[in-house]
Image 1: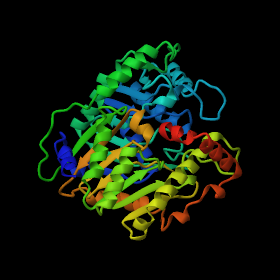
Image 2 (image 1 turned 135 degrees about the vertical axis):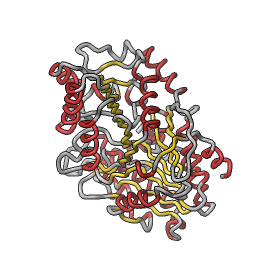
Image 3 (image 1 turned 135 degrees about the horizontal axis):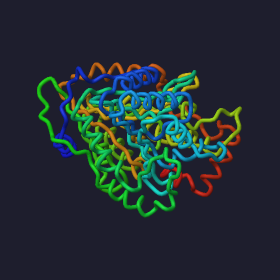
Image 4 (image 1 turned 60 degrees about the horizontal axis):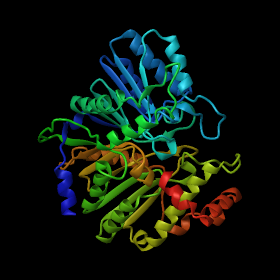
Length: 446
């Protein structure tokens, strides 16, 4: 425990004025703030997300980016999205060129181009995607796990709930942009998605392999700053793969150093072995552990029983079975309230929150799902906040209260459904998966 805390304290930090740190509480606030910052940009706009969708909200974002560029041709506008995700349709939809068709359409309409880069973290999407997060506009960083489409931006009647943090900080903004420029933008594996002719993934295979190798060695670079009285420290972390992954290392260190309380947010209950081990140790040494996870019906893969069943719709049920097993073996700790499990559900909306609070001293905001896929396959990042003087405690407590508003506390594992309670299609799928032991493989890549 002491060694873990020492490792966290030794991390270089960027000083952050707590008065220039803001928590947003809804997808609508996030959308309005993002659009507002884009309209006011004077020097640069760097948006990094898994995808920018061809729908009303995605088109609105793209329109604002192009309009900003036309008004100020010197404005540096770069969008990074996953290479594979951008070139396919939605899961279950007909074969298509995906969102890349939208990017080409917009490129034809405007005089001054913007860069929309497809980033291939692996040769196939199933084995790794760009899961890096961060929207940098001039000297402001908006950090969220959200992608850019109708549901994440609450364009219509549904939303996908995420976390949203705004930091005015030139050093942090420069550091995050520099990472993109040095490690992503100029690599031959990374190509513009709006060009008429794009290379195929097959021809890029050697370049992608070399690119991933370089990513495993990449890190955020900045001159460490002295955090003065009245400031908090921020350490940006990045990682991909199992080896030399500093983000994974310090997520484990955060749990290992906890003395009083840990709160963990995850949309998919499927901890990697190392996190599960550290959570178990924390509970045994008397730390109060709170886990907030989306109800199966708030999972982004959930399909209501009255709609046509697709194989991918089995995932939320698989995650719930994981959670039920965890709750059952920890029933005594749940009864004593040392372990609290909250299920989030709000109408037909979905839950996509990730992150961690430890002893009100450390906070992690991240796009990392705390699952084996994030641990081994995807390119992930996060911002570790050190706040020993508890200058941001009130903001984070307000955020936590807004998250808990639509949760139910699980008093016993028996409150969670068993496989017999699931729709017949789901039961058949899950029994087949377990019969051939495919659940072990699925848990590693989904």
